[in-house]
Image 1 (spheres, helix red, strand yellow):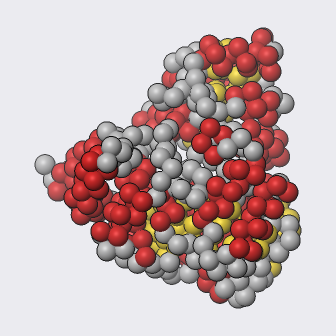
Image 2: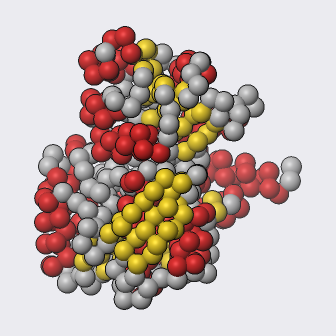
Length: 453
C-alpha cells in the first residue's frame, strides 16, 4: 500500500470516528466545551484573523466568494463551511483546496487527546461529550493554526451566539439574508432568530449585511450600536447596481462601501448570487482596508471568474440537463425558482424533491410550483428524512395530483426524471429540497459513466 493509500484509509477512519458523535440534527447551545479545547490547544482560534458569516441562506456561496477574493490578493486562506455534500473533508479548505488526507489525519491526531480530555470532563458532569460539529470546528481552527493561514473565513453552523464557531472573535461579521428556518432551535419569530445570529458581532467588529426584513435590520442595528461596530447594509452602502445573464454566468456591477466595480463576470447563476457577490465585496473591503480602500478591479475580476459554489444551481450532467440546488427552505426555493426562469430557457422541468422532517415542505413546494412541470417525490438519504408518502400528500395539494409521482428510491427517481427530460427539446431535471439528496446525486454523477457532462 502506498503512502497516499495509507493516508486515505486513515482519513476514512477519522471520518468514521467523527460519525460516532452526536449529529448536527441535535446541536448543543453551548460554547464552553469548544472554548476549553481550543484554549488547551494554545488558543488556535486566535492565531489568525477571522471573517465570520451567519445567516439563513447564501452563507456558503458568500463565504466561498470572500475566500476567493482574499486568495486572489495573495493571502493564504482557510475556509470552514457546512454542511458537506459528499465528504466531510469538503468543509475545511486551505488556499481553495480541500484538506489533504495527510493533513486531516495529522491534525486530528494533534487535537484528539484534548477532545477526549474534555469529553471525560463533560461526562463526569453528566453532560454530553463534544458533538460532531463541535469537533469539526476544533479541527478546522487547529488546522488553520498549524498551516498557518493569513485569514480564516468561517461559516457559522446554526444560529450564531451559541454556535461553536463563535469561540473566535470575528474582525468582520457578515450577515446573509436571515429568514425563518430551524425554528425549533432558533425561535419562532424573525426577531428571535436574528438575535441568536447577531451573537457573532464582537466589540468594534466591522459588520456588513445583505438587505434584511425590517425586524431583522432592527436587531442588527441594535447589536452594532451596543458593540460600537460600524455597520454597512445592503441597499444603503452596499448595492447591486446591475446584473445581466451571460454565457456560463452573469455580468455584475457592484457598489461596495469603498468603491464601485463594473461588468465583473460571475461564474454563478441567479440574482441571489449577484447579491451575495456584493456582500462579499463589502466584507473584503472591510477586512483589507477598514472599508475605506477600493479593491483592485482586476483582482476582483480574477476571483469572480473562478469562484465555484458546489450544490448551488450546479450543472452535474447534460443530455439531458441535470441541475442540483441545495435550497431547503422557502426563501432558498424562491431564489431558485427566480433563477430558473431568468437564467435558463427550459420548457419542461422535472423536479426530484426530498425534504427533511424539520423543514417547511409546503413553503418549498409553493415557491417552486410555477417553475416545474412535474415533481417526483423521493426520500433523502438521511435519518431525518420525511417519508415520500407524507411529502406526496402535501405536494398533490400544491402541484395537483396529476403532476406528482412518488418513488422512494432516489436513484430510481432520478432515472425517471431523466426519462421525462429526454423527451422534451429543452427538458431538464432539477434535484432540490435536501442537501443530502444533492450530495447523493453529485456522488452518483461522479461514479456513473453513463451520465454525459
